[in-house]
View 1 (cartoon, helix red, strand yellow):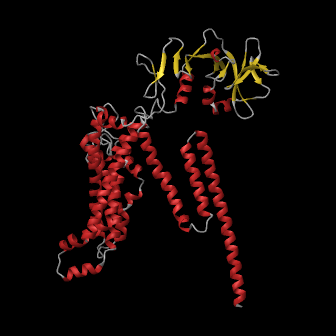
View 2 (tube, rainbow, N blue to C red):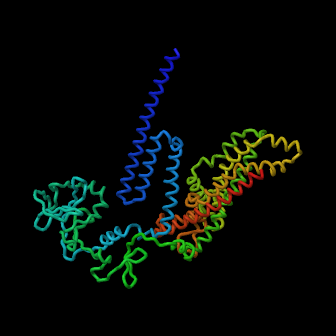
View 3 (cartoon, rainbow, N blue to C red):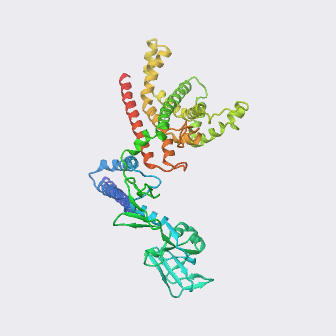
Length: 526
């Protein structure tokens, strides 16, 4: 019987091994497929660094998961990959952008900037007629134009194919309705690819100087000719109407002899220029100093107030003689259960000067400018953040209090220690040892708590003497958001925003390192 059971166990183990092997092959196949897709996408975009990194990670994954000796790597590799992709890469790329002029007017490479300048600086050929136009597509989906000339002949072309006459095309009401070798797009299809249609330029002939056909309504075509001409050998851009020659400068733009620049530029390395702007340009240095001080004050006060209130409530509801503790604890964590951005929006409405619940109901119709006065706005931000943050500290302190050793308190009672002495010498030190890392993380979170600021005050009220969209309740991360121009209130300047992000990273890193060092000292004291 034992021999039969052993053979059955061996058979079961073998089938389990085969099933595990099949599952591993399927999963690794999916990983390799996704990885190769990412490699090809990065290859087409010209991101050679991403291509190299993706290939290295794919080879490492296959080597680790198909090797019997790399058992620790099977557990470490996923976390390491996520660390590299979502942390280290982000920091390195942000650092790279901080030393460039990446932003409005400098979004692309030089080759792309040249193409954009040539495409954007065109004029309609004087005296050129308008032609009935039909949008068509080739078998591979490439768009083209079919135009009908004055003689009724249909000519078809695409971006890389000049207009050529075609035989066998059908013309109805002066417009091409069927074109051999092409598919005529209906109105819905044209609307789906509207941007491609308006961006398309079909050369009139092999001579680029003859111009190209464009359309804005997908029904009528006009011949346009370029105003700017690029000389690749001399690396210059010439305006054909004025004869002005533009040459590249160090700021990533084509510049004329009189200092005039063309509007579209390209990314170049500018060194520490963004950091110099952040700390030396009055437009940013003045608001930056005020916002930096407020950010530290907001983060520290938020941590202190939420911790003290949460600890107080935790100690109150940790009393065994208190009836209904579970109900009270549930009520205490309700603010924490509500999404933070939604709660901030609700408070913004409740604190409205004219019709907010606080003024109209609680204060009997008063018009207190909670969100429009600089100091009251800061107080409101701290108050709302206290309401949102104390439940987290309440939960943390409740867990820490319940884990404190009872024999220490027993020894204190035997020694005759008072309640205040017990709290000061036992409860508080042990509580700080357990919660100090969480207090540090709470400081880092509030240092970057952009959701509360944007939803409650949007950084307002604005500075009276600032030429940039910054205000009294902005913190550094909301300043970065405003400077980046993502909200549409200012020109996009990703280089300057990245430089400020590096400053935030360094500040939070230094504060966290010092705080953790003090935490170790606290553990040694206890």
